[in-house]
Image (cartoon, rainbow, N blue to C red; front, side, top):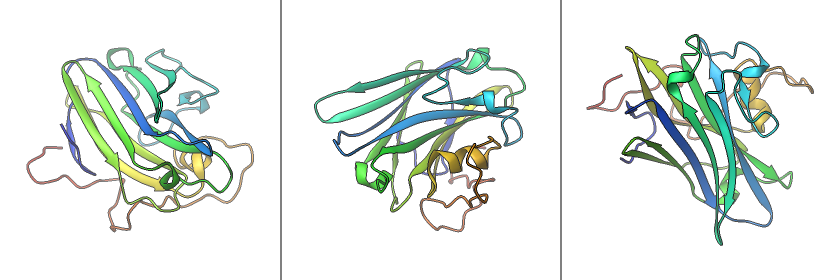
Length: 201
């Protein structure tokens, strides 16, 4: 199933794999990360899963690492939704650029998010990127006793640190709090994303 920005659907089963792929480059790379949220914020810095902390405290989310094909790089994480701490209501999945300081996500070329749960596959292509260095690609969230997935595509111009700060992570080199910049200036309030016609919330 191809998802567009803001679109959501129910996740079948209690386990989902999220893979983010981009064309391979010798100049820059990217990294996948996840944040476990309660009411839109992490409960502590331990709820930030990234390359230096590859598993969540409850063991439900694990970064399984990158694979390199001839022309594509894929970074993957697994979510055991049934094992997620009941206090966690949302899991935000982000991708951030790595490599040369001037690199941007747009420099990587098309970024494709593939989420596989049971026999279902959900795909979302990050578009409308210009000078963003990180983006929240998708979020998993609880709704009426089940888990759903939403394609987000919210870009940040200040990298992984900007994503982390926006969700309550303490960043060592504290700078003035950044303002998240949507990948496209659509005027959408991403705290309450739109629901496309024909899709339930």
